[in-house]
Length: 289
Ligand SMILES: NC(=O)c1ccc[n+]([C@@H]2O[C@H](COP(=O)([O-])OP(=O)(O)OC[C@H]3O[C@@H](n4cnc5c(N)ncnc54)[C@H](OP(=O)(O)O)[C@@H]3O)[C@@H](O)[C@H]2O)c1
Image 1 (tube, rainbow, N blue to C red):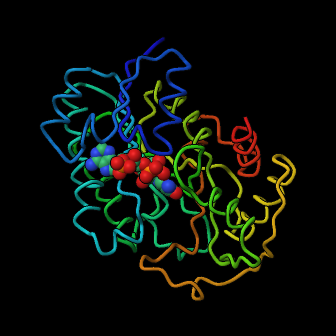
Image 2: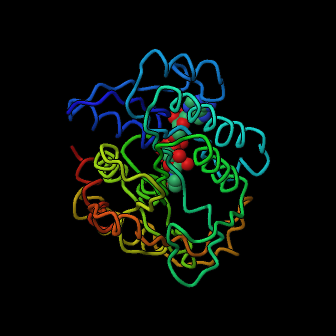
Image 3: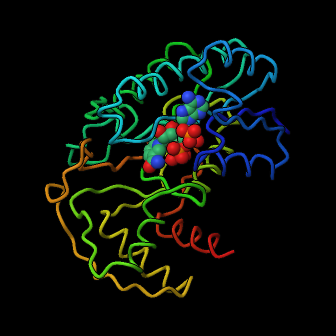
């Protein structure tokens, strides 16, 4: 059945793939970029959502500049917390289901095991704290919500780690990449396919959804080079070297352990995402086409 779906952040990495997939599947989509609906504007959110009357709102808009958020604190909270409140209020008034995309950064990353959906959150960065504040807004204002935490996102649209490594790998003689942070890289198209499956259910709650299996950023880069050589025929000049987080201090702290267990996908009988390396291969094939 075709649904009326409104997507926020429609010009972003995930938003663009989400809109394309929804349109391909015959849903009626309102793709909202910042011009169409600035989520920090409560009245505009109310008007746009009330006019379209979606059955589902997929809220992908966010302040995602993790390091910049450490100094531009107000902007991070205005978009991730207040903006999410505005979207949640308007979606609730329209009787719509709400999917809020969240992040592994809501955890402190110090655990020795994967985080599941009901572990205590303890964000360490402004980005993580503001995204967690958005989760709280959604949980308190929405009756029909899905909070979907994902990690290490990359896709065809926008800048991301994979594209940066493909470029630097061909330009630099040496690349040092962090080998003491572990997580699950996630291809936007795979996450969008999961959201498509989830949105038509009434299995509300918190979900961890990333491509499965884990690696460090260094191991991810090794795989990017190997697969890009195979699929795109690229040659890389850069010698890869593992390094530590301490060697590359950044304004925002990164979780050492970003690995998330998919307890809710399992317990709700949903189909899990494929392993990250298969997602990476699919991304490179899509990039080629
Ligand atoms: N990227 C990751 O590694 C990662 C990891 C875990 C979770 N996530 C979450 O996944 C979701 C999608 O991430 P992404 O990588 O697709 O992010 P993205 O490419 O940065 O896209 C976010 C979009 O939100 C828009 N936006 C920002 N402020 C807005 C406002 N006030 N009103 C309307 N739109 C606004 C941005 O527009 P402008 O370009 O105009 O600013 C951008 O198009 C986010 O919720 C993010 O927190 C991402």
